[in-house]
Length: 470
Image (cartoon, rainbow, N blue to C red):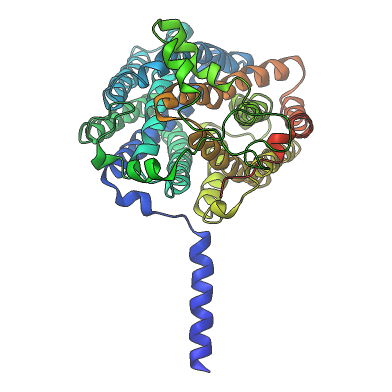
């Protein structure tokens, strides 16, 4: 009897363990240094995000002006993706990360100085916001290109899930803490803390080994020999038929094959810049991973409306703005922490589509939640949980499909979508709210998100039917 009970308890613990996040990548020194440094700095950055949105709303009282943050940030993100990300494939990625962090620290210092002088002009706040966005996009491109070389292929989904868990922990703690600090002490404390947290990231990155592109030192690239012996892990050019991407009898094409033309044509700077986009040509599954995220972020990301909703709909202040930002991340963190099952999912394309549809439904529910703060926060949490699952699968498809010497440029495009999409969403939400109302803006965005995902599933069946390689 006791033996049966012990066996049952062991089986239950095994089932729970399979659901919980895989922490094996943290055993690797280089990944651990990168992860811990970003954990601290991203917390500070998310404290500052709340301050930025609250500050613009305090200066103008306009949802459209808050949405304007997204517009001024999108341009440097675009420039970083086009001209900064190719640098990641040509120069030491650790050095690029250090430069980007110094620029981010400079932007935080500028915002702090603006608060200390009393009444900073809106143009100064916008300029600092643009600098934050451009340098942050470059640092994210470097981190994304480094990650696959710091862990084994088997550990890659777990590493991406850990990154999602880290980012969403920062998105929970940062905005919630930022809202409370701003309500009590003002905007200056938020920008000051952001400036201090960059010290942790700079120290952590300095402790890492150099990370030159496409020739990473063996001691920080544990899967180099494994990848060399296991053969190609790209899925090759896409086609609209059912035999593409491992769905039928056509085998994946070698990683090196599509690089011959790219390398021969990349003597000029512009050709190098556009190499990532040329690599995407004809690869509809990869294209769909970007399109589906753009759909969710442009139409279903209402964060520009958080200051006005907190004041008008919920009768709250900066502390509630912080909670609205954090609620999405609470759900995302729970999704990441229970992501142990994701490596068993083969229909990864369908999983992305379903997750984004749930995101849209959560945003619609948030829009019709009325004055119930608890219900509104719960709806945002559900949306966040769906978003992190989508992100894990999208990143896995992307990282496994792209050769190392193009990862910087493809990561640049990925970051353009991931970080630029919400900025366009800020502008869309602010504009629609100005023309109609904040509630109409939120609900219509969620509905469009759901409908657009359904249309994408029909138009790109190769993505809907995509299966991860065995």
